Structure formats: structure tokens, C-alpha cells
Length: 141
Image 1 (cartoon, rainbow, N blue to C red):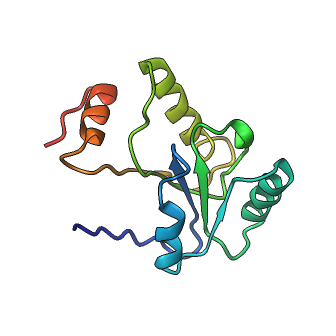
Image 2: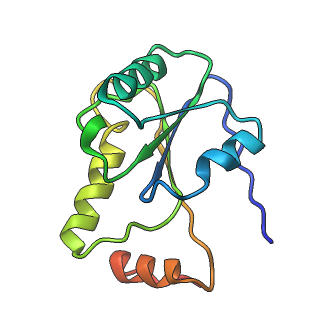
């Protein structure tokens, strides 16, 4: 098993995008004692967690489903790190590009005062590599 750790400086915030809710991202964050908010549940709960994240509360990490439109258009410039936990599985290149652009655009917009870091993770020797190479036209070595 390979482990990789990113250290995010204090005062910086993170958006983690997953595509499938059954990915165990929330369990991994909890196991590593990383406080986070998740955009799921009722519209009121989603709105409450979005507002809490925007208000710079104790949680520095926001977990979102990249395909969920409930946070669409939300200005999340309080974050300056975007993490994709796996390549997006889409039927077309246009949908792939639109989803990724929209996700990154939540932090990279007018009002962002910090450098934005984009992190993409995938597992070697899995279908993740093939999806990533097909959609980005980049070879993984």
C-alpha cells in the first residue's frame, strides 16, 4: 500500500471532489482526524454546510460530489486547494471538461486572493489510469 500525505498550510482550505458517494473519502478523513464538512442530505443541510465552510469555521475541508449541482455556482474562494480523488467517469469529453472546469471554477474566480492548487489522484494499475489518459490525452508513466 502506498501512502501520500499533503500538508496544507494553516489558514488555507480545501475542496475535495468525489464522483461516487460510496467512495470512502469521509471515512479516510475521519480516520486521519481531519475535520470536514460534507455537502449531502437535504437542501437545508447542504446550504448550512456551505455557509459554515464559507464562514471560515473550524473545518478546513469540504467534501463535494462533483456531479451534484446543489453547490453549483457557489463562490468558494475561501478555499485554494482543489483535490479530485479519482478521474471523472463521463460519457463524453465535453461532459468531463465541463465538470472539471466547473469544479475548479468554484475557487478560481474573481475574489480569489491566493494561488490555487489543483491535485488529481488516481490508483496506478487500475482503470483510473486509462480514464485519465483518455480524457486528458496525457500519458501516465
